[in-house]
Image: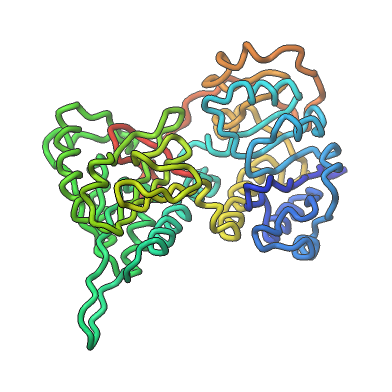
Length: 424
């Protein structure tokens, strides 16, 4: 009997969906039976009929209890998990850092869960990298949102009535979101500059036609690990870089920040004093607002007026382009699930020795098994149900995945003194 894949409808604050008509067709081709919760794709522009046309069955939320595999955008709530059967395998963006109690709840429910954002950044897993796929769209949307709030034209315009100067855009962090922001602002005709503490980012920034801003001393030249991530910088370097950035920001019309560090508050990159130095009508976009923000005074879900600057703090920026974000996320999920289906027998099975499984599996067999979270979550895990899992899986301690050195285009966002992760 084929395994049942259930695609959930997310909450009202999440417009994305974990499947697309394309991914449904491909999942069905793997021998899986796909069930879509009614209305799951409406906020992403996908009606139930489009899913049905590619082989899915539409059902109510009550049928999730019979599912072997559950696909979600975000981690399920305790109420939602109560309807899942023990042994079900759940794929989602789990946001595990600082949420050990929620991980323990998933363990108590007897679920085998995978955190898509923990996918190792190796060549084999590029097609499964949800951080990059969603950050790319967030970088694009950040520029669109900024241009909407900016009360002037972005490109230089030479007219009979005079010349309109091009907007000056400064992007802090040249990772996936940052590079897409640079490219989008350039397409709109802005004069773009960017900063990053990784030397390799300079070439990436220049290749997109933007000016690189950094204190390029000997410490800067050695500020990258063998894996391509930023090293912590000395206080002296940080002070010099902050002075340079402050001077540069005073001349900008739009500032976009992208630095987000997993498991830690976002680094503060732009102070109120820096905002006060900008011209009236300037705009700043904080892509890290959900982790405390890179910009002093930014507010989650709002456009705040801080020192005369419109500071955009929208949450779930990728979700503001839900149709595109859902399509890419669905492809990420399919690429991962495909590695677990035997091409000959069409059987779904999880190989605990696979490096992708080791890196992303959070819970199994009533326990939090990921070594980064197991100790902190252990206090919350009691009386977990023991159930036959959907696939044969043995809890295995994760080993560090091989990380290839990646260009800034697929590396972490950074604008502070440490490596940072892409924004979802």
